[in-house]
Amino acid sequence: MEFSFNAFYTLIAAVIVLLLGRFLVNKIEFLRKYNIPEPVAGGLVAAILSLLVHNIWGYSITTSSELQTSFMLVFFASIGLSANFAKLKEGGLGLVIFLVCVASFIVVQDFVGMGLATALGLDPLVGLIAGSITLTGGHGTAGAWGEILETQHGIQGALALGMASATFGLIIGGIIGGPLAKLLINRYQLSSPKTQKEVDETNQQAVTELGEYVPFEYPHQVRLITADNAITTLGLFAACLAFAEFMTGYSKGQWFELPTFVWALAGGVILRNVLEGVLRIKMFDRAIDVFGNAALSLYLAMALLSLKLWQLADLAGPLVVILSAQTLTMALYAAFVTFRVMGKNYDAAVLAAGHCGFGMGATPTAVANMQAITNMYGPSHKAFLIVPLCGAFFVDLINATVIQLILKFIA
Image (cartoon, rainbow, N blue to C red; front, side, top):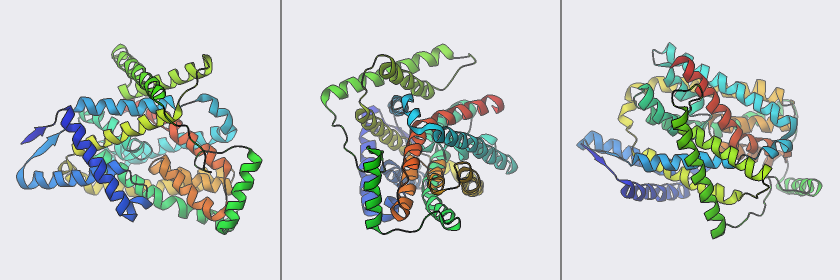
């Protein structure tokens, strides 16, 4: 028997899941260490409970798909609204080279996944789910494409498979990044471990010389959100969602047909750069970030609430094989391609750690990997400038483009 939650009950259940996840993350060191998001922690517990209830009593629940989709679109719109192309100048040539590395790896990641899936007798789209959709894309992208692959391509359990793969990627991305960078640093004698006092002194000197703070690298003051800012930002999100709805209908059946969430992201990019670059209107990044993260948390909680883990039983073995191969591929690529292409120096080693973070998990994992290295060996201004710029937006745009091209050729 299946119970359907309307929008109000879905929202209440999602908030309960988030509160449970917050409690678990605060109490369990493992979850904090590997940056497991609160909605994922709480949502997985809810999904396991749902599995037990289904196996014992035969009950399952379905959440409000309309509300879930709306929060997903707000999240992707926030990514687009955060994309200031003027920041490309800050990253310079290093950012462009790193983006080429990342784009190339996304293609490699997808071909490894699809190749192994085919060899194991599965639909190659299952390998795509255990590829860049979930590992480079993370939980938000996993949910968005999972729904599309289930409804339009007939991949049963695609959402559950995606959430499981994305969670694995978050954990393993945090495990392999730091040790890999340390191995490279020690092997090529790029730096030596420093005391905390030496690290603090070096950081202060870097701030003084640069005359600025770099996000995530040094503490910095953030802008408070006012009611006016919040209202303006909500208007921007509404414009992005309206644009996405219009373009989804207009492009249907055309060569430029794209999923709705990609149009929401594109709408954010266009709106941000027209308002800021052409009309010189200042954007409220802090408000965009807060609304985007809140939407992602609620969306993930709702998606995980409706997971049907019993649909994964037949894919458990092959999934382990594919994800293990993806882990090895990520480590080898970061060591032999990213590290060497980025200059084979200390900054390159820190960038390799960051690439492992968002190549298997998410930008917060990448930042945590780099912080672990710089806390021991000293700052890397270049790495902390490039990775957040790349991981916060550009990687999602590149990933969406690659996935869309692959689907057009094989679906």
